[in-house]
Amino acid sequence: MPLSRTVRCICIEISKKRFNPKSLEKLEIIPASQSCQHIEIIATMKKTGEKRCLNPESKAVENLLKAVSKERSKRSP
Amino acid sequence: MPLSRTVRCICIEISKKRFNPKSLEKLEIIPASQSCQHIEIIATMKKTGEKRCLNPESKAVENLLKAVSKERSKRSP
Image 1 (tube, rainbow over the protein chains, first blue to last red):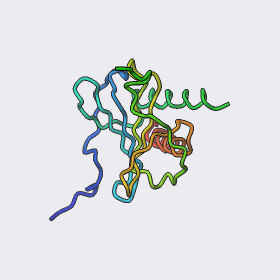
Image 2 (image 1 turned 120 degrees about the vertical axis):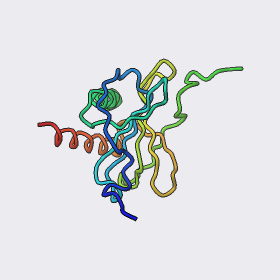
Image 3 (image 1 turned 90 degrees about the horizontal axis):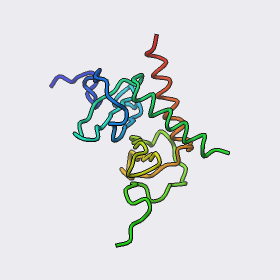
Image 4 (image 1 turned 180 degrees about the vertical axis):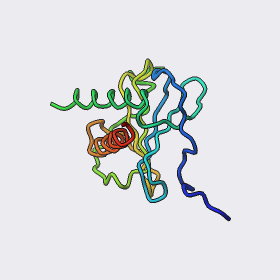
């Protein structure tokens, strides 16, 4: 059975569609591992529950990271 | 029926246990919304599948964010 080179990666293709970060229900970050050599970022949409693989440099990812950093700095003394 | 003030938040308590970021299978980031007013970060452990709510300022979260940023800067020209 021929195996894909990225057989264990979840994302087959990266969505290039733009979307409003507010329509994001959650963002899953799957670290690089032996089974998939790059980080994977999967967005779940609020209304449809649709899952999309995102580019780490997308606006939505950027905004989420900013939100987390903001939360971090808020809590740190 | 008495309602908790944070009835729609997923995390009831934040885990303070330390763990090796390598044992992290994935990290879920749930943005603040009308139903839960703060960002929630849920880690799933590799071996056990156990889910833990994390403090946004924890080491694991910091490392994951660094990894994402690294990926971002790698891909940007």
